[in-house]
Structures are given as structure tokens and as C-alpha cells.
Length: 306
Image (tube, rainbow, N blue to C red; front, side, top):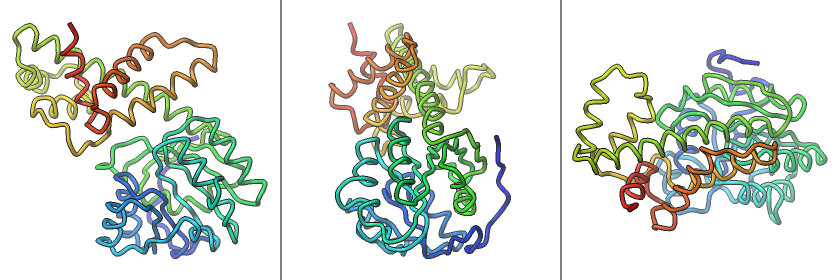
């Protein structure tokens, strides 16, 4: 079910006051959402021990709090975390949200994880009187405000969260029970991995045959070919400029996402052939020490083969 954006919401809409919104994980995606929450005049807190995140919060004028202080009042907690292990630690670990909560909260997980962790966390949260939403982000950080959120939730969780989610997402798709949002996101990430791998392969073959990757990119961009996707535009530009630092999306995160997607598919009784090949290339990139580089760097791994 598609629930389209309904415009700016008042801070008190759905029973949610401005002061009760906290982002846990203030990296690239968390900051993108945070800027729009501030633009919408929501008061905002963040929790993230990383020095770069604390510096970003200070620059934006956002209060930073410890994880133990996040759930000290009713409100909404937005998670932008690297993966399942971090989600479990933040939500159900010692000193985490559930252990320290002093009032009912709604946890919105915008991370990319597997359905199992969402179901487990939702069960624990509801047992303590809290709500859970998994709403992983479809969209790059630079298009925050136009993001799409596939949503899994515990019963009745979405309405209180909607005014905040609509600050940075244009489309909310209500999929079903907790975990179902992550199903959609992992499928998307498997497609991302396939496009990334095929871009890497075509660039490597192009160079091997004497056509400079930058020239190939220029030709493709001048064409009206159906193969020129938005992702190819970004990846090809990075390859043509030989620029992989300041990653929009790192190889380490892509490797994790595709691996989780394969595990999900296998649990459903399917063996992904393309996905397995993509996963092998991603693993090779990590073994080559390229985990923190942008995913466009994968072409170097392919080019070095043979």
C-alpha cells in the first residue's frame, strides 16, 4: 500500500512533540535526514560516539546525548546503523534502548539489515510496550526528501511516526509485518550489486580492448541507450575520474548487503546465481583492502584478474 507524502506536518501531529526525535547513527544518511528535520523545525537530538558525527552534530547545532539517555522520554528514535549486529547492540544490548527506556518509544530502523533482526527486535520492543518500524531507505543521501521507505511495522506504529518520516521521504509503502521492509531493501541492494558488478566488468573489458573507460562513459552518456541508469551515471563518472574516496556507498557496506540478500534468498529456498557471482567479487574487493572505497572501485578488482 502506497502512502504518499501529505506535506509538512506540525511538530505535535500524531502526539509527537519536536523535542522527542533522536537519531542514533549520525553518518551520511542520518545527517541527510537530520538536515530536513531541522528545516521542518523539529527539535532534534543525536546519539553517535564517532568524533566525525559529534562534530557534524555540533556544526548543525544539534544536541548530542548518550545512548542511555535516548529513551528517557516518550518519542521517536531513528536508527541509521551499519547492520544487524549494531542494531541488536543498540536496541537490546546492555545499556541499549530497551534496557534504559523510561517511557514508551517508537523505534524506526532506517538501516539495511535482514528481516530476522527486525522481527526479533520488534518482538522484544512490543513485549515492553514500545512500537517498531523497519523502514530502510531507498535512495542516495543527496536525494533526501525524495526517499522511498518500504515499511514493516508492529500494529499501529506508523501513524505517530508519519509526520517525521514525511520530512525526508516522498513515498511510504506499507508492506506488512515487522521485517517486510528489509525484504524489499535487500532485493534492491542485490540489484545495486549486479549493476555495480556489470559496470566494473564492462569498464575492465573496455580498457583491455584499448577503449579508455572515460571514453566509454562519455559515449554511453551521450546515447539514449536504455542501459544508462542513474546508478551507472554515478559509477561511470567516478571510474572516468579515477575517484573512489569520500564514498557515497562503500564496498564494505555493499558486501554486507548482498551477503544478507543471498542469505535471505537461500532461506526462501532459492540459490541466486548472479547474486553469488556478485558476492564473490565484493569479497575480493574487501580482501584487496578496498572496503572503505566507493563501490565504483570494484572495476579495479575485475581489471586485475588474469
